[in-house]
Image (tube, rainbow, N blue to C red; front, side, top):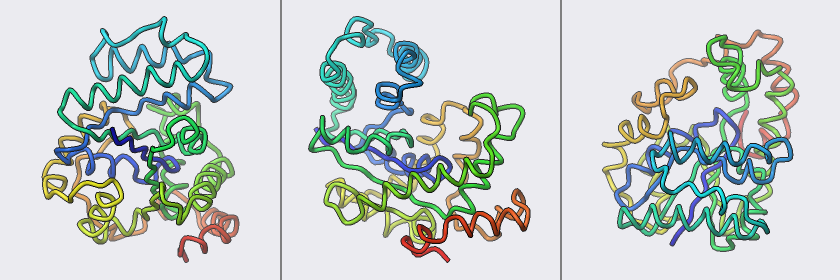
Length: 268
């Protein structure tokens, strides 16, 4: 079984790329499991049972796969082995030998995951910090949904989320089990960069990805507010949307605080 993890900073385009890859007939994908995030993040460990109950009962509608005793097993190796075997089985059920799991926060546990799954591969999505920070600010300030983000995020917190994520991506750059995709490049030349992803995953490019991604986006997005519009056409932005959500002094502040990492990824 080939196991692929799609990671990056929040609001970087991971959901769009997941939708495209999930539309490949030989790739099985799921809503965000958040498994390793809840397994290892100190503030979330106590909520792992509830998180997986939500995943199995409501998100993939397979309550028979939820096994509380297995989830509570020690050591950690047993929990991981059980959960990965479930994802393997779900892929096999679709007669596939590749699954793609997208949880952006799993970027913080990439090396830990590789320690348990040494054959896993990671696709990282990187996006310009102005667009990411503006999108984070917009999503977390929306009174209808900001509680789902834990409240409104400050400008500094958004900047740090971008920096911490792309710093990890940069560390793994040019290593064989990691592929870095710039979101802007994907929008500009979808076939080229989807082909690059497929080559990395070891599957042939299939035009069905561009035909069926909207359906997959709706299925995987679960109707969550931050996935609104996931079924839109994928085209390069014609205007700089960040200017609608960031003030001129905030734009300058973001640029000043991301200079080094921006340059590492070729962003002006």
